[in-house]
Length: 611
Ligand code: PTT
Image 1: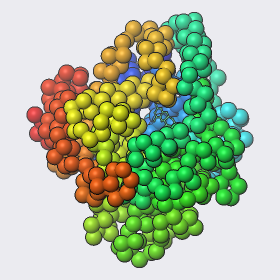
Image 2 (image 1 turned 180 degrees about the vertical axis):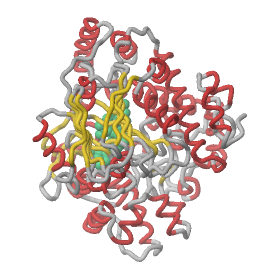
Image 3 (image 1 turned 90 degrees about the vertical axis):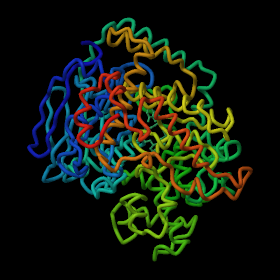
Image 4 (image 1 turned 60 degrees about the vertical axis):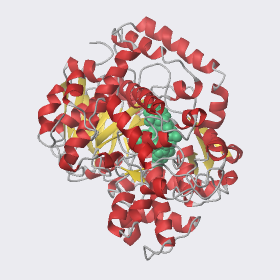
């Protein structure tokens, strides 16, 4: 088998032992990598009902057949596990040197299990794999801890690590790398923390074996050149993800504002891409990156922080902030403590609204930077009543507060919604509803397409577009483990990917073949959620928050808009039908069989009757 090594590392923190295992070739052929490897491992090894914070949960870091190779934009690693935030399948995909070094060390993925008595980090140096004491790193922020690991193990080494948020089991702690990147929104950093695993460091010296190295190298050179020459590349490099800011505020009217009460923000110009460009001090990129989308400014403390649209939307307009440097400070604290900016921003906004409505004792007003900063510290240290409450995310906070607060807990399946208001965007609401990890835009960012094609309609075409995007963004890119930005942002054609795949593995697969693997993963991940929920599973799990249905926008050109419940139900049933799921959103036996997942049927039938 070329392209894959057929080997994984299994590291156990209870015994402090690690071993190298071979995995069956069929795993690669049926699941390809990344998300596919993660869901198959979780299905097989993490039984229903496992406490996500227990030693029995697994932390997975997976490459795909392209990750870490010498080709454009594949410096990515997928991190996954059973989510402490949602209780379902969780993952994230972050830019990191780790991919390059794990690949060079000769492994396709890594499963960490058990729980250590004292803090540890895992060191992978080709065949030498060992746990090291991490007492000196525990309690340290990610910037300091990463710098120390790099000092000890060499510049350019691959690191995945957590901050105090993960150590304190904040349920939306992320995995960090490269002093800028973060991934694993649904608490993948929390799983590391629960195992007393501060970091994983990889340092590899080997060369991956490819099916046709010469063709691969040729394609790689051509790909780099093609992306460099794309007309959209310079502006993307200049603005990164913040380039969407003006569109979201002035064309889409979907900028999350005051806890998603509105889609336009009266102070949007203070947080805009232009302001970011004026303040920018440097840019960052992942390994093998052609577009360097990380734009950094100095925050109010004079510290460097990388901004992205999602971070500025959720920590900025959504909480009523009016100064980009203040948003930068909240963002930098989230990075240092290693918690997700989206869930953090949503939690702060939720607290602001609960305070305004008199549902909590604490007083925190919209736009109060000092209090938001204090609350961030409290959440990340799990300090104080409000800090403790919000460290578990908005769903649990709303369950505890009651009094109708669930209506404005802006989450789906427990994961806080990312940066697009959907009062008047039913297709995007569907995309959030059926995302495989909870409300994340990563799988079907349909918002610009939807607005171009008519935002009002509850049309079948929107469902088709969601599925088309999921196959690519949530499927192919997550299984190959390659950044999707060259394709989606600068127009690097999709045909390149089967060509790289063929040169790496020798398999002449079409895009359709890769989409079939995506579909297999979608139905297995959905089955995993159903197996976890058992008799409690219902389409309600895919439902957006009540706010979007019941509380009309009051500002901007879309004032008066809400989502229509019947219309949304129609979209959902089309979606289920097209995926081959029944009207409860559960894959049918015929679908599971047609995707080669018949082995999942007996397990699923223990908890639900399948159609
Ligand atoms: C992603 C989510 C996003 S989506 C952003 S900004 W983005 C937030 N970034 C955070 C951050 O920063 N610090 C922090 N403490 N929390 C953060 N939470 C938020 O996390 C770099 C890019 C980006 S920037 C995106 S969309 C694309 N994501 C890809 C993906 O998911 N898959 C893929 N195959 N290619 C992708 N390319 C792009 O990569 P999660 P990253 Mg991300 C500081 O991981 O869990 O999905 O969370 O990892 O390397 O930072 O992404 O507008």
